[in-house]
Amino acid sequence: MTTAQRTLWRHARLATLHGSTPWGWLDDGALLVDGERLAWVGRDDDVPAGSAVDAEVDLAGALVTPGLIDAHTHLVYAGERAGEFEQRLQGASYEQIARAGGGIQRTVAATRAASDDSLFALAAPRARALMAEGVTTIEVKSGYGLAADHEARCLGVARRLGRELPLAVRTTSLGAHALPPEFAGRADDYIDAVCGWLPAQASAGLVDAVDGFCDTIGFTPAQTRRVFDAARALELPVKLHAEQLSNQEGAALAAGYGALSCDHLEHLSASGIAAMRQAGTVALLLPGAYYFLRDTTLPPVAALREAGVPMAIATDHNPGSSPTLSLLLMLNMACTLFRLTPEEAFRGVTIQAARALGLADRGTLAVGQRADFAVFDAEHPRELAYRFGHNPCRRVVFAGQERARCIAPGSLA
Ligand code: DI6
Ligand code: FE
Image (cartoon, rainbow, N blue to C red; front, top):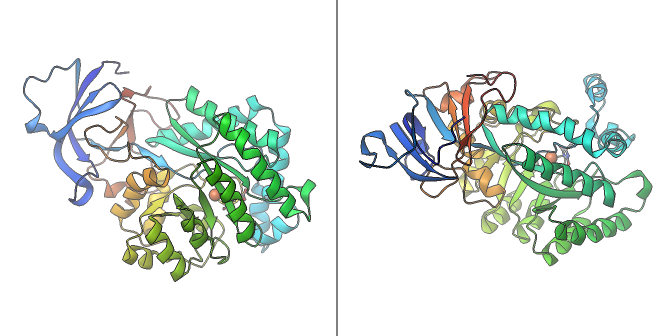
């Protein structure tokens, strides 16, 4: 562990993602960390002479990138749904399983039955698996409690991950994820309840943003609007699971509320793209869910690119539609399935992911940014999108401190 206050990291192949050059690339770069921040970034030859440092590390040409950011996860839940995977392989659809009382409801039942400690014990290794690939910030949604106390418990477990692991955690309240059984046939009453929980969640410091699932098996645009009005009254930013299974014009609705991101977007319309562009909303694409649900409708990547809508990439880790814990694999899938360039995909898990969380202090390597970075056994960051099922992350610095090397199996230097 490097514990020095001022550390100079030298001789890195540096993908800063800062400035206007491809990858913000520096062939032989250096980073000066002062406390939790980057005090200097540049060519190794230009390291200011006489910089007082407490320690110096020679990276011998290893690749250094900003710490990765997984901006969309449902990490806190109990139980798994491998049986539904088998059912889907035999022809049942995700919607059919959900309508028959499986799907999200199955996970809600298991989550409600689990104690806070067991939810934490289940979520922490998932977070560690992400961390082992160089992830330094994650977003965690509620949405498997679907009752005031259970939603608050899940958000509390997410906060605890951020306290007990060397990882930054942003929480999102997703009460409007699915209709719980006790509200069957009373979706509007349930939305009233969800809106009613938000002030207490906010005043307990449990929530950084508010999300919903606007779809035929989720909630209507009118119901989504009510959740967003409640969020707005609390000055909480919003985001939305939009146009995943059908086009509800949810993206345009969310953009009208200045949404940080609209997520999934396989069925996004031209008017949705225009509204997102105008609002500066990030398109958060989730290739793991597309792949695992064997979807055939691609998100309109070329049109998003053309419109200049920023694109982010995340795991969407959840037990039903995307049980992956590899953000690096998502880079590969974003390229092979969605046709992003490796650089677009990589910006999608760094600078654009930060933007999707409303964070401006991370996602690039530049003076004043948080000293969150990852060291990879690779020559160029395009290799991170090229290989799959392989973890070349060797070291991670979080808030200026190097994490213990063997934080998870597979992350040994
Ligand atoms: N869309 C998704 O892909 C996840 N939630 C959502 O609204 C799936 C959640 C699950 O199946 O448990
Ligand atoms: Fe999701």
